[in-house]
Image 1 (cartoon, rainbow, N blue to C red):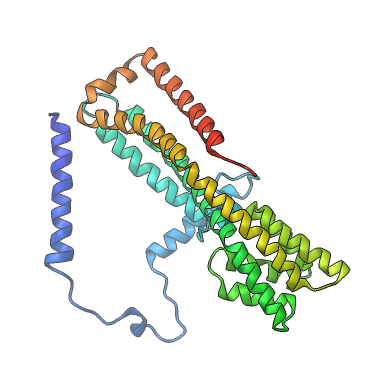
Image 2: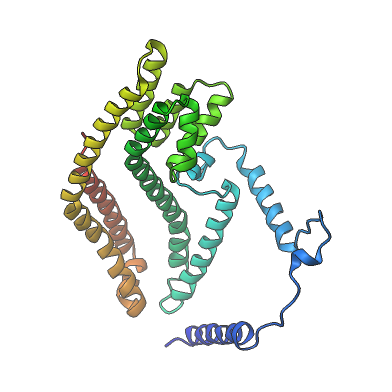
Amino acid sequence: MSPVILVVGLAVCLLALLVGLFFVIAPPPPRVARDRRLPPGVEQVSLLGRVTAQATAVVDTATSRRRGRIFGEAALELAGVSSPPSQFLIVVASFASVLGLLGVVLGLANGTSIPLGLFFAILTPIGAKVMLNVRTSRRRAKFADQIDDAVQLIAGSLRAGHGLSTAIASVANEADSPMSEELARAVNESRLGRSLPEALSVVADRMQSKDFDWVAQAIGINAETGGNLAEVLDQVGKTIRERNQVRRQVRSLSAEGRLSGTILIVLPIALFLFFALIQPTYTAAFFGNIFGILALVVAAILMIIGSIWIAVVVRVKF
């Protein structure tokens, strides 16, 4: 074993022991709560808070000049992340630094510190982007499952004598996220001057929901022609319910293909990382010459193509 790795391991163990002694065995004495020590109406900002605010302001200034952001406000909002883009970017950069340092430490044994550090540092923003895409897909799928219940509640409120805006606002207050957030956004836009059908159409475009677009179109047509909107929404809700049943059936039938694709994608990466940890000499050959690097690049390209192929095959549109 390399003496450098031994020293790093001993330092980490000693740090963990000190943390355990400080926070568990010898906890600090109880103190008066901070909000009771401050006078009313005075908000004291700590040094860490001021440093964080300054760093966020610097990142905002640096990224505000760019039109396209990799972690824009719209992308974070679609994924359900409440942090501003600057704070999220700082978190991603912090994780990239930590993982890059971890790659450098792991590569000390076989002389691959720089490639592993760069690999882990570059992998962090890619992983963050993938995480945002996954959260966005799940949020849109949850929104699609809530449409039929929301339409039924709106129709019931209309039968009770409420107006359309009041009915949608009540559903926004009672429904779960993300339906409540999107309906509240549409109601607020209508109060600012945009027509309600147009605001609902914008929500359908944001969530990429054809079913909710039907609801917006039905409300828009009813606003122009008149009629019993509650009965129209009942018919639309029935159609959406049937489509959701078919969608769930298709998803259950394609579950085996999606699971097989996930295993085929994750297994080679997991095995490579496993051998890199337990036997670094096996994977060091890939970074020691140009042919090994080309093999890794070709393998990555083929895995990306295979992932896209599997995703297209198991995705059924109707």
